[in-house]
Image 1 (tube, rainbow, N blue to C red):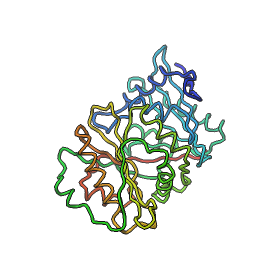
Image 2: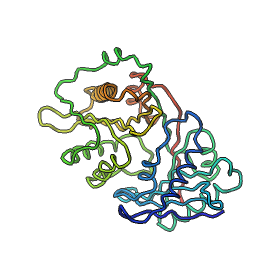
Image 3: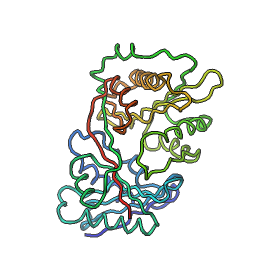
Image 4: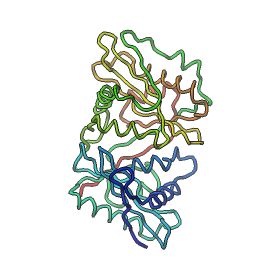
Length: 330
């Protein structure tokens, strides 16, 4: 049994350990229980957890038994903000190899890499109950923030009622597009995403810096990994200023019917007009027109975010499960 670093390419076309990434992804998938929500597909797993980007540098390791990958971890080091932190996800051991101290060995290896990078705050997330939560608690991590996932079953949704819920909002115009944002939209998108920084987060986490470079890299990677999204933003009529936005993501090769509700944000100066409800409903109705294969939409919210929870519940989202964000100071 050995822990082997996975080669992460610095640029497209550089050598990489694709087989080890695929093995780590397979171990991650094996740890999922039936109907535990949408599994991150391999292409997006490779981009988000095993590839460098303007916003983070990545290290990943595979746990290898003979020639088989039986586990491993991915560790991300933010570069634009939160420079004292590292984010580990996944850390996984195939179910058939658990109970032998392998997870503890991976965790210790990851802590050594944190120290080597001068990082002092380790973050991760797990379901609120189960193997991951027990492991995090047993290894000295504490709960920093609780989140709830809720789902809307599009096959059972009351669509006439949802249409009737659309509020009338004056003074704003909706703008929408499918797929990555065009280059000319990136500055406005950056403004809107940076408006997410007043969403609930735990005290150790700094505001995120959504730079144009960071957004451009993420938008341009969508077609490469087979991902698309439906985006609706609101602009103030008087000056065209971006006021609010929402997004729903789909993996185009997915066959299980899942779609992912991304962030919804209303900038502080534009709150109190029901823009959040208007955008989420409009975007959902638009998705339904174009993506009949989408059966369920899943969304995340901090349990303290009462306003967004109220919107989701009014739309018919039902509690699916709860997750914890965990922290450990080194």
